Image (cartoon, rainbow over the protein chains, first blue to last red):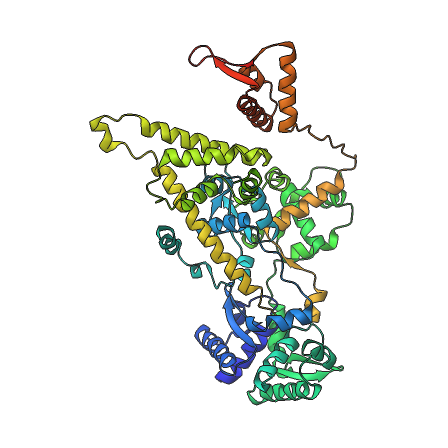
Length: 177
Length: 177
Length: 233
């Protein structure tokens, strides 16, 4: 298949998917095309959007690909959609989320130990917002539930995958400075 | 405002709108721009999409403007929509699945009693998605079939085994705190 | 600084580690070489104003106070020559905890910045056929919430909620003062044993400390490790 045609097909599929579309999903629709070709089409498509200065961009997020608006247009969009930014997470919830993101899978008692303060209401908030999910049980006394971050976490924080998080050692420099 | 910038703004507004966006709506967001300029931007944007052979098109429909997929790609779309991941559930199916997960093995009359409404279509959906399987018959009048969750269920919900399901008590501890 | 200003500040602290970090940064202290008695003093001065915080938090702040005092006492103990090389610095665990806390605070700020940027990004509105489709990609949490909804619906008999009687610090102080109408000596062990919850225990402890500070009562321990009595002044 020609690259230009493949690019258009991929564009249409990324456009209609209501959540980031995964490479495997594209492969399932395009069985005759190799994974490398699909990836090449995605990357070239993203480059085309950048090159023509579109208000939209094609990018990889949460293990999939999606089309979204560029941040610089948010004022016009808010004015049209009459949508206020959603409430920010409290410092306690953010800190708990940071600990879970870096130490996952982690249990509630382990989080308590790290924070030195009870975190159950923060954890409830994070579960309600679907930012964290249970990730099995720890094989120790009481078999407590372990938690980890969700796909929604990657989407809301604009991450391709967890490896895109800066390493916790990078914050060490901040600590020692 | 430069035409290229105006084009991008118009593009993002057409993109996020859930129905064809009318000229008056665009004017309301862009009070400093004339109707003629907005129309020119829309027409030029549509021309750009055509010129680059995009899988998408910008067109005027039902008194407004929208971005949609070109008809020639619809077979790929149909194939994609058919292959969508199957963990998506309606509220009724989710509730029935929850009962089966926590109370298994359980018969249809017992589920009816818990939910208070007939659940046979939900059970059919769950069987179709292979999330539940028959687990023998209950030794009582009529020997009704008992159901339990399947291996597919564990895979879809990311569980190693059923003991990893959080217990109601654990959940309530979080909720009540 | 006025008391009010202190109280506003205490609300800002997420927990004892946060307060400790604030004290250290305020005095530009090296985190690896904390002058423990100075910091302990400052810490205690701050938590003296804790009474308006909720009791669970107060307990956590008190626990840290106990840790600080413990470290301080360990540092005062003379160490034998041989022992000195092997004994770890009593502060090391706390230093470790503080630097971890600092790192995660920085990570939390990074997350905040990322989320602010993402809030400015919009995706396409749902197409008509997604809207008709109310199906959700369910997680384990959706599952348990759905099960809980069923159980809640099943609760046919109305549940009578009995509010736990929670005594405030002021009420507890009044209660202890009333005891001294009929006696001039209260056994603190018995007083604490009578507490029915962790919260009540903390309130009682704070009330006794407050009364002692106000010189309403004196604390007396007749023998080492013996029972402590509160005496009417």
